[in-house]
Length: 297
Image 1 (cartoon, rainbow, N blue to C red):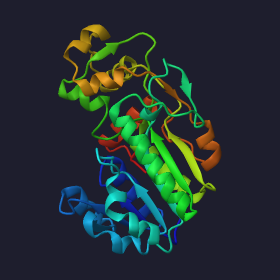
Image 2: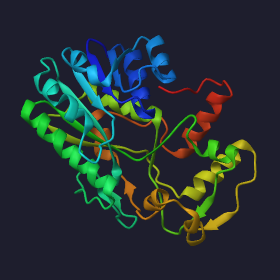
Image 3: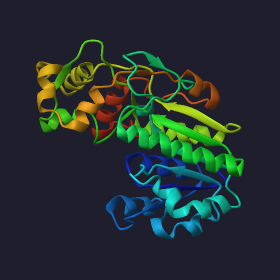
Image 4: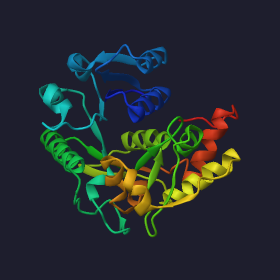
């Protein structure tokens, strides 16, 4: 996949993974970040990725063919549109916009499945801000007449951010809440989905789900990580007991229960998760750590 220039706003965990994968696929890539001097930014620069200060990104937008926004919304709205809305509206070569959102916009569904056609019903304040940001980007894309992909992500994990790390640090708790499951996605699969979406854009606003094929209880994931590490799993802990010491943010995730479908996303983009469940994802992380060649995209 070559012949284009991708501008990524935000140098978080997902943004960095997409930038690396896009550069490896032959795209020119620039990342707009508030801190170009940080270690991750320097690593991207060594990989041939341009780093630009967030406030000075208008120049990069002038030559962008693809735009991916990973920066979260603020109380006042979307920070990228606030700073660069005019430059995005005027970008002459722009042919695709991607916005990394969250499946949290669906709110609590009592454990039911949500597909890409489901109506958002955000319950948490942060999810309502996400939905408002999605709608703002919809207006921009429709005004430009170019495709927009709202990529709603499930719980993100990957190297350095998985149940393996929780166990090693002693932070892991095997919480049991009957009937409750989380959907997840490996960070490498986020990168793969972004590239697939760019390669096969839709004709307008499109909802894509960044989620693997197997929603699962948190306790099962912790148990599998312990098995891979060859250590005893933490004892089962009833949710009501665990909730007493949870932060409000952690509790808010447990207060919602939904399973995220991805069939329409696969059909629209040709994407298939490299890691269809947490089992393959955790095994690949451990193999990479041990130098067995199962790295990210």
